Length: 301
Image (cartoon, rainbow, N blue to C red; front, side, top):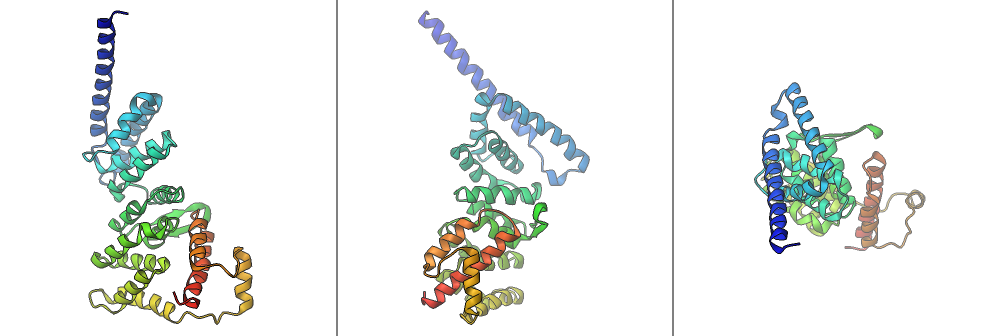
């Protein structure tokens, strides 16, 4: 084929691709130029139909549109709702680790008033379980103190506190502890602060327990927050092995953990076993946290 003709065909291909890209970007900007929580039910239904059409369009031509979707989710100039709905679309169409990382980075840019809290909890928790650092997305729920999720299959309602626990517990605590400590210093909302105290208590590091003690005594915090911190600090201070040995042994057998596990080993078991959202998972979390704190006290860590 003549070189000029080849060049012309390549140029046409690039031009067509560029037009498709510009068209989809313009469509995204127009389609997502709204905040669901500001719309009436009827308006939301109309928008849902338009969004379904957009999802179908991208799915029907993934080779052309997925690269554009990835790029736009990585940019900063879109409406907050696009970062969540677009991320859910990406997760729907792709199972690649790189695409999941794009979603992890984009989701915290959303306005939580615009999304279903339960869906947000499930999405972030399962990305946590898969090994992604979702700490920023998890701590994003501090922007909505009224955050609440409901898990129908377990008839389980989680407030902001245990929603935050559920998203963070599958992570290595080194990924979130500094962020939580920082928020505990600057946060002013009592609901948020009490959620952060709970995370610090489960983290069970020297720094996290010291911060709980500080919050219990500091007039910088409200009486409610000080009381929450005091109750957890008192529990740790009075922690002992007065529980009957038989009961402890039975619990070990139930959890299938040996007696000679180190503090670090128990912590890793606890992290790996938090792999679902359920009342059973939260009960097991508390049971393993008991053994974690027991190991710390007995070994003077």
